[in-house]
Image 1 (tube, rainbow, N blue to C red):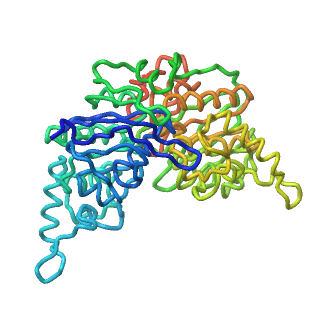
Image 2 (image 1 turned 90 degrees about the horizontal axis):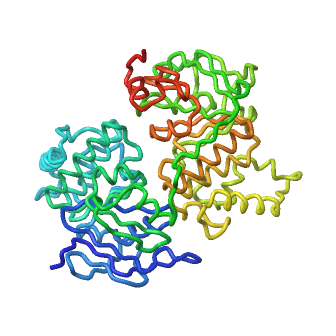
Image 3 (image 1 turned 120 degrees about the vertical axis):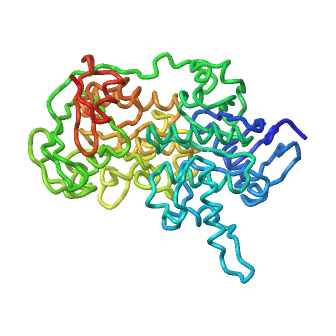
Length: 500
């Protein structure tokens, strides 16, 4: 027997034009939480797919409990005790908790019928092990994101998994749900289950991990106990350089009001939303999950209907019935759901980069392909999008690089008002700085930038002014440099408290 529940030895994986893994090694001990970090495109996703049987390895060895294994498919990996909880949950929302936990592994009676009584009992027991006393008959789509994630973890636990891989597990969770998840992880660790915890949030690694492995360009860079590391060491290992200023805020010169919203209302969702957003500033929008931040700006952009209120662009009332109207009024909206709303995953990087402005690259019915290629290659270089070429299919890029393509798409539009919804979700620390610099440049050019973010350090680091929302209402407006411009007061407003 080995001292490791799972071991990757000198694994290489090559795709056409890309060496995704190069002699990569990783060892995970039983009953430890092992962090895995690296820039977007570092090879984390490929490594996970090799461990879970999605990809075979070209060179090198995989071992489980010290014995060499060859996975032909995900079923082989699952049988060996490896499970993965992906960032995009694999939950069938129309089915019950029980049905999701037992998917593909249903218990049958002697007469061939499904034994739901036994499955419900085991499902309830499994969820109780994770700290949740919940009715297993409940439909998963009616549960919150945190509970849905627990159901997927429950499925992995019920399969008696030795190693559970968690890929960006907190990306869609609120503060309370993250605390719940961490408690579940500690409980699993105490039961001897190994967790491979993939995250871009360094503070999470220090909160939950025992050891951390850093990858860069498909290679192993560093593995060490978390107690021997700090943020600077991790960042340097990830990007090969220190990031002296995580939030490179450049103060712009506030200009005229670009966007005014007055008494915006949507029954049951938004309640009298009013604010101004200026040229030459970054307006931060803070609040807890479910506060109505995204809903507000989807309504402004014409993606969701409104019942009342007024929208003014440069002081003039406008009617925005759909996103096409918003684009005509020089608005750009970078959605938080890059896969569902931001990209056409089956199309090339080039196609996605010009998606919002085909007409701008046309002469009559013909596209100016040389100009398009030059512009797209310029954006790829400016945003450091890791892609073999602009002809590469977007689905083949890592999540962070897909996010950069979404940002690049709106850089091709003649917009004056930029709405960034969770612009750095799922992006590594190096890529975050590049996004912030894009924002700084837009502000320098006199554009209006609105940034919705769940990360308070980001809000404080980059905003000139912050509006705080709760339950579809604005509860505070805070100027940079004012006495309330701090994490504690923003959280107080987010929870509905009053700032004196």
